[in-house]
Amino acid sequence: AQSVTQLGSHVSVSEGALVLLRCNYSSSVPPYLFWYVQYPNQGLQLLLKYTSAATLVKGINGFEAEFKKSETSFHLTKPSAHMSDAAEYFCAVTTAGGTSYGKLTFGQGTILTVHP
Amino acid sequence: DSGVTQTPKHLITATGQRVTLRCSPRSGDLSVYWYQQSLDQGLQFLIQYYNGEERAKGNILERFSAQQFPDLHSELNLSSLELGDSALYFCASSPLVGTSGNEQFFGPGTRLTVL
Image 1 (cartoon, rainbow over the protein chains, first blue to last red):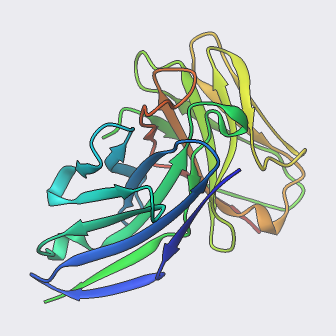
Image 2 (image 1 turned 30 degrees about the vertical axis):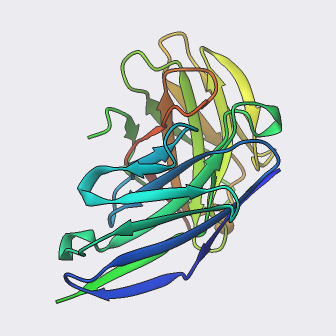
């Protein structure tokens, strides 16, 4: 079985401040990890993914995430927040096989608010 | 634009009714996934099809069914609707049978409201 926990349902930062969204996963086999963003009334857009290559993954819009196996974490960061980053962010996990085959398991989501 | 299309965008219906949600995957993608997003349950995987065959099943109710047609579009059928079925239903597609690190591309969703 696999699961994802996103710490903090709401995160608020000032424009220009560091963005840190936390994600911890649980998986009995090596995971593949994703961060998706959802803007209001839209579908999910992939920000970045970890697929067992480099542990530091760079994505779109200046976001990056680091896979830390020892901490079972995959936190999302951005050095300087923009107003346009305000959205809901989802961490998701899957594996290449087993009972989780073909299935993304999502965290509960973190709503990011950016203040001017 | 992800290349995945879903129709209709909004659907309002009454309890006990049956509805069909439609999804067209990205050109060339053989896998289609259905997810339900609700306030209380979050984003949950429902079912996956690959090239017309069911490949994985999640928390899908017996009142719900899906299929993928030869042209690769998929339909999610929801019957005997209850108030709790009100949610946003997403379709996603990917090129291969399993994710294996391949990302899933999500459609804009169908918002179902059951009155």
